[in-house]
Image (cartoon, rainbow, N blue to C red; front, side, top):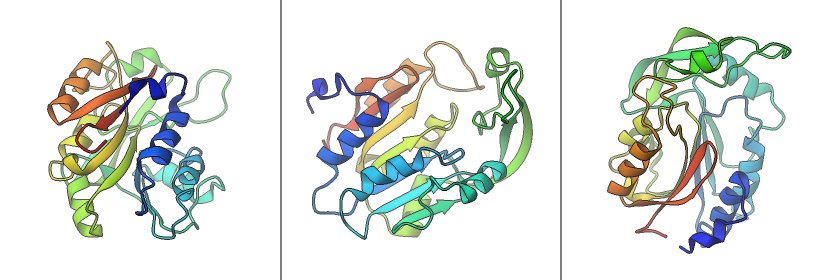
Length: 233
């Protein structure tokens, strides 16, 4: 991969570029969106996938937080009725089972909307100092590993994983021991020097782990990193 391909591309344009150039090869695309929040960005991602013009593409969307899940069901931007789309009320974790979710809420001054996008399987740490209006409640949620989910669905490869799970990205990856060599791209949230959630890996830790597993950095954004599997791309 020529990394200068991404020089002028923003986050979502980079996702589209990867799918258009490296995932449309006369095969169905398998896309994971992990941490859907309210579903507002899902329609855009789905449009990237559906441009493949196949009726057997797979779009798996994971959101464990009940309040967000119910919002998604009512959100017209979420492609719930589109071919190949499946909304899963589970978190993606390093182990399959029932675990605690630190579910976020609270309203910033001047904003009437609840702030529900900071929920994590990891316990809040510095995030409560950066956003003092945040509140966290415990909510038991069902979790599944990528490996177990792929076995259930007979998935043998994944083209793209877009994960926004508030510091728990490495936990997700640890649950993909078998599938990791079969994943082309991963778009992961990062934190450079602030441990927002306890046991959250910082950027360099995440990069080191990914490199040990044959993933290289395609581009670093302000809050995210796009990785590609150098053995597949």
